[in-house]
Length: 363
Image (tube, rainbow, N blue to C red; front, side, top):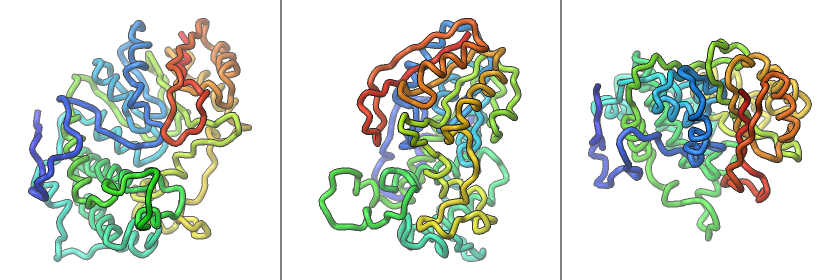
């Protein structure tokens, strides 16, 4: 199996920021990531005998990746296309990495080709400065030259993570480049992180992705489907849906990361932008998982579809539906339902001190 641990492009004397043990999931600042509690999740399902499993709302892929490390045959799924590439690079991919010369190609300007300017033309003074917008247009164009889907996916993963880490709040929910540029005292954020060049972060995240690649001997897959279109032949299904707080406020990943999703449809991006929005978001689309009136039936349909599998649901104790309501829905299809509690684990931007991270396990 091909591996590389010293790719640095000679771009600086600095070593990659994140160095750790062999075969480790890459770092991420993705909203709602289960990276800090994934070991607790895995520990609570080890008692069950299962060989093939579905990470149904995969997100970063951290749970699916750890299930792959457990030797399971993993199918990763996410409705967002940029997340699908994360799953392709880190879960389906068993051996392919980006070599140093390929990283050089991606980061270089090639004078013989005409580069597009979509990000420059449409996102000036919104998320990144002008030089950085030129960089993004260049990188996505160079990545399109790769025919190998895993090489493209790894490069795209690194591009997305570089974009996330250079954003205030690590989101694309508002036009706020001024936060980075203002010369003021800060109570949050990391100006040192923001000011590091995109090249540095891209190489850093390629290194992390390369080190994460391994073959567990299984035919793992990454899908980009509505969850009700995914096959049902799984021993265990892990579910981590978007979360609606008790106040009815939904975590809208499509809205938070629309810029990254736009990169996946670069050539038709302009047709899908809501130009009435200051931050150039994508046109809104219906989503039952962020609609407080539809989410009850969404869970019911989901549990019914996978009723023959072990169901494992990551949830917050104060969400909509409530913990008791969700347990009641699951009991329609599972004889045994168990609830495990992690405690007062709080996400970075959350102000709710009382909400608990829980697992509902139906078997």
